[in-house]
Amino acid sequence: MAPRIVVFGASGYTGRLVVASLLARGVDPVLAGRSAASLQPLAAPNGLTYRTADATDPSTVRALVGAGDVLVSTVGPFSRYGYAAAAAAADAGAHYVDSTGEVDFVQQLQEQFSDRAAANGATMVPAFGYDYVPGVLAGALAAQAAGTPGGYLRIGYFALGSLRRGISGGTRATLAEALTRPTAVYRSGSLFTRRMGSASYEFRVQDRRRQAFLAMGTEVLFLPGTYPVLAAVEVYNGWFPALARVAGPLTRAASALQRLPGGRKALARAASLRGLPGGGPDERERSRSGSYTVANLSDSRGYTAVEVRLQGPNVYTLTGELLAEAAVALRDGHAGASGVQGPVGAFGLEGLTALSARAGLRVLSTGSRR
Image (cartoon, rainbow, N blue to C red; front, side):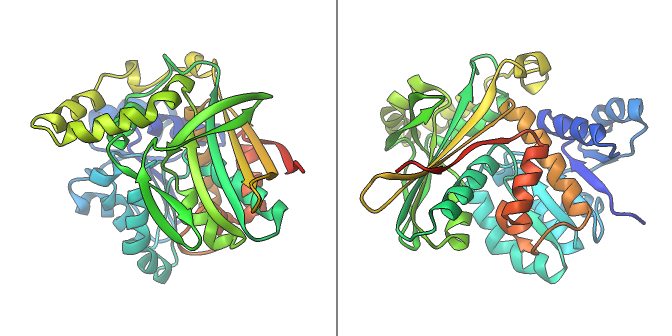
């Protein structure tokens, strides 16, 4: 039997985008999720197969995939619902790719499943969406171009156009939860935790200076091992310039609030605000914005040595396209290594660059700014 691509969480917002991207590539995925009533209307128009599975019942998730299949997981929050899918893939020898933006979840996958997946010939590539493929790609290109040790890499994520009406409920929930979580930075061989928003940095975006605040990113986990020239790696978020200016006080307040009676419930209510119809922006709304990523690599004197800029479609559109491209690449045997891998480890820099281009992510510039 030919390997299958199974989209777990297919009726959710990100899952539907992945399914649409796969169909546009001539791939008929198997749809999987908790509710047959939600899956059947999605499957019927294209004659797709669907299966029911519940992340809280691991045995149902294990039944979804076999050796050589690809499991695309979009079921979050991943720290609560993601482990069943990861375990199922590792145990079955199925390849795995997900849409998580939760760095601590990725670290847990590395610790718990990498050896098991490698032993079974499976490649697991977590966080393969707008978070954080563009930053990994831009950072890798910058590190390769620099070539000399001691580089200080700062990666910034930005939106082109307005996102005020174009944020999904899942993104808002992730951002609200992240306000109270520490973020990781890489320094001279080790990971250190800092409060989210405790630092800011200005990047050049389309010939303008835009401020971004310190945020979470899997770049700190995956880039230093591949590019030992890097002495430091930090990730910044600049989606909303006004938020970047108040991120520090906001995260301090959120941390204080969660320690008060009822504080955790208040933050949870903020995280569960209803999103747009269907869970996120529709195609028309997504067409009004784009994504932009900058990797700034400074030398030991603090001067910018290399700057890489990438531009792509709307952040959600890009996530769906990237996950679809990764799933096809894994199905077709184009992974370069087994176990839990970052984007470069899974596909190589050349392969990742080509895959990203097919997903609509363009490299605008790569080079020295000396």
